[in-house]
Amino acid sequence: MANGFQVTKEDWEHMTPELRAWMTFNAVQNIDRRLTKLESRKWVDKTCSFAGGIIGGICAYFGGKAI
Figure 1 (cartoon, rainbow, N blue to C red):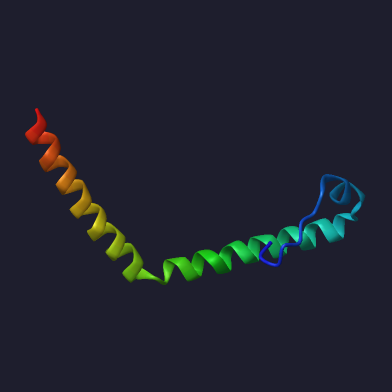
Figure 2: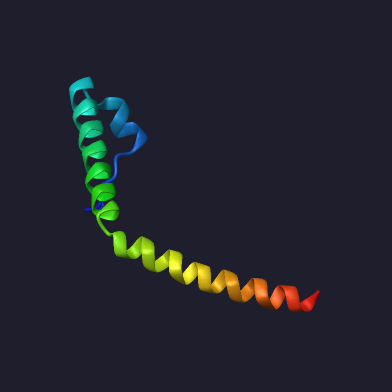
């Protein structure tokens, strides 16, 4: 998790089913929160796509010249 807390296999085996379900729920909520934050950054997607297109175009240009 983000705070550095880790559950070992032994800890997981000794937990109650309710605690396991609660930890699973928290993990899914954390993943959802992170994905929502990433998806809200449209400018990152556009910037990376633009930069990737430029880099790909340059590589294709020089790759075609070498043949």
